[in-house]
Amino acid sequence: MDLLLLEKALLGLFSAIVVSILISKLRGRKFKLPPGPVPVPIFGNWLQVGDDLNHRNLTDMAKKFGDIFLLRMGQRNLTVVSSPELAKDVLHTQGVEFGSRTRNVVFDIFTGKGQDMVFTVYGEHWRKMRRIMTVPFFTNKVVQQYRAGWEDEIDRVVQDVRKNPEAATTGIVIRKRLQLMMYNNMYRIMFDSRFESEDDPLFLQLKALNGERSKLAQSFDYNYGDFIPILRPLLRGYLKMCQQVKEKRLHLFKKHFVDERKRIASTVKHADSTKLKCAMDHILEAQQKGEINEDNVLYIVENINVAAIETTLWSIEWGIAELVNHPHIQQKLREEIDSVLGPGVPITEPDTHKLPYLQAVIKETLRLRMAIPLLVPHMNLQNAKLGGYDIPAESKVLVNAWWLANNPAQWKNPEEFRPERFLEEEAKVEANGNDFRYLPFGVGRRSCPGIILAMPILGITLGRLVQSFELLPPPGQDKIDTSEKGGQFSLHILNHSTIVAKPRVF
Image (tube, one colour):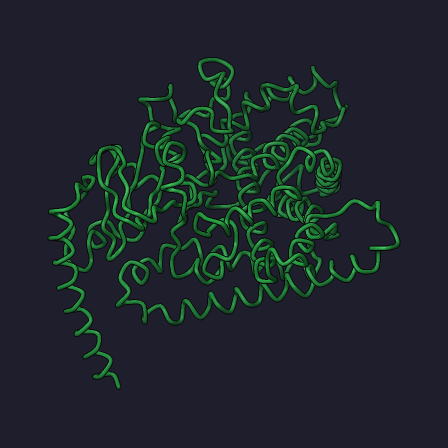
């Protein structure tokens, strides 16, 4: 059996070499490809570049090969753009041509091969999913309906931290409590429900499964099997684990949340027609009309659990870390809040618009510590042109948004955490993509619609923590560790920080 498998593998390897050489020669005559390292048959640039295609490694390659370069990763073409002009071309000018999503063997499992909104190809399904998700999730009306709930959740965080004696002395990992807050923020919107504590068994199960999903999906460890299909049998165990986690998550979503919401909706339908609908009620109505199926419903829940909860939590954690490590900025922010609102007056969502320094702190956090530094990958379904080069069909196209926002040729001292830049030389730059040097949420057709939720939640959370506590590193430390942990396209803090939170007395 082993010999038969080896024989098939060698035959496939020989065939792949022949095909690769033929394709390479044909493309050499037909295409003007972007520059990049010279590929070798079968492996392309994989042996030279490795699996870890994080934003900093890709930045180093851009410095060598230019603002657009091509990597041949096994049988996959990977085009990386690193200039505002090229980013505009991919995301805006040719937004339709580059509007699809490339997936990989793991994301195919977790999204049902694109049955969700985030990773589906550009077309009718995406338009339908985007429309169905926009009204219940991504409008100003939703912000106004749920902002009181967000304010309540951060108020509960403040109360819990104040009650914890360790918080003001040795410090606590505040992220754990903020994670519960973010789940409650989004589950209030989705299902009109919340978890009472960090020890809630359902919350613990949900958090564990979502954590496993993120760990498996964001890892670079499976790239070799994605780049070189002949090696995919070696991923059998990994992919089986992904499938098991996916099935457990979708079962949990269905049993404890979607089906429960169906039951509640059926009992109150006639009793109280004026009751505010949660997002799932709208989505289930779309299912009843035949616009989407039950799998689509579950993958919408999957998207929100990952894209809305975890990314915002990463940004909150980065913001806290930078404020702890820059006490003068923290104090300046506190003084702004006290002077505008009055000492001890809890910040609300409308207040965030009156606090320009708070907005600048948020923008600077998103610039320096961009949660999705490469944005979500794009793909061209057909052969396309970009920057004077030919981009073969079905190429994975990455926009290195982190480098756009941290390139010293474009920004003054970008390595500094300096919110003042957004009140001074970059005062006109917003997070909504009005400047192609700064795209924390992307821009164009496939931009992240969650910006409308993330910005006010960031403002309320960071603002309330700063006005309620003096945030410090643990005893004996001058700063907290801000080492990065990157994934397929994520960026979060490597070690969840212990923070001392000394309550302010008003």
